Image (cartoon, rainbow, N blue to C red; front, top):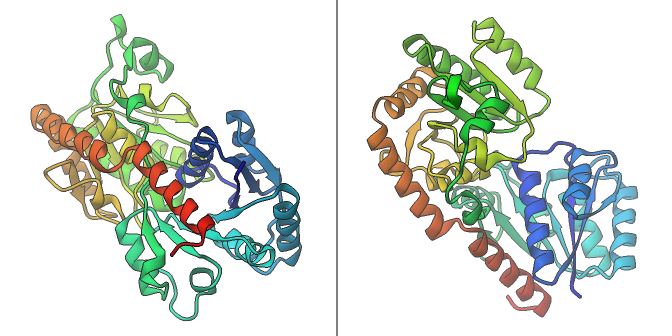
Length: 369
């Protein structure tokens, strides 16, 4: 059996970490054994155990933590690892050095669109045989930072289309988030977002935008799905803006297809960085009209006026106007949503993504360029 070691130094559980878990499960279904090395006590390892992914705690204190390198080398040798796949900054250094020490190929995934400093950049030039990016925009950033273009491949996260083909919300889901009126119907139009609560997701701008929408549509509600370190901060902002009774915070949920099924508009207000967000692909696959910031890899999914509506980042007025366009013209919004679903089928299916990843792995194991 071929064995791959994925490394992730993050303590959180957002789209990047969920993609890593999803790929690990898909690789296991196709005959690989996948081991995930994560920080002791991290939410990622906790979630890995819950979904049946083999997790191993490895302390990764920083990019120069030799103890972490040695622990990974021991793991590689003890378990017969044939390939290492790194995901974040710290583990890209440690996992990359461990793979070189142990003599196995290494893949680095760059998930985010934060600019990379110029210069030597050993992580991309020497500590990775291939660099995967979550979109073409990020691929160009990695190449501009000095990575050889032939080693950099854009493979966006794939979405399991069958899980989102016909999402059903219904009265039970509405009731679970406090948005069911008498008879089980929604209390009003629902604007939703699925994102980890971190600064780059722009929850403050989304709340400002929704305040404008709610002033025109008092029955509208905002549904924020996800968790993270800034959730309490966002809840405080909602109260400060007088939205405490009309914004629902669900926390981490596993029934995302059902939650998407009750949304009239999906809004993603990302600011400083973004790859090709899984939640955006899931909303597109579910047929929910899209509104999102023009940043990172988002325009690879949302073509303005065709598959959704794009707005400048950090512009609550423009975001509110776009949400209002969706709610005011459901027929036009539905047409864009159908086009977004078709784009997912053509370019962003899970089968396509995992198939390309397996080809890349097999090329490296065979020593082919």
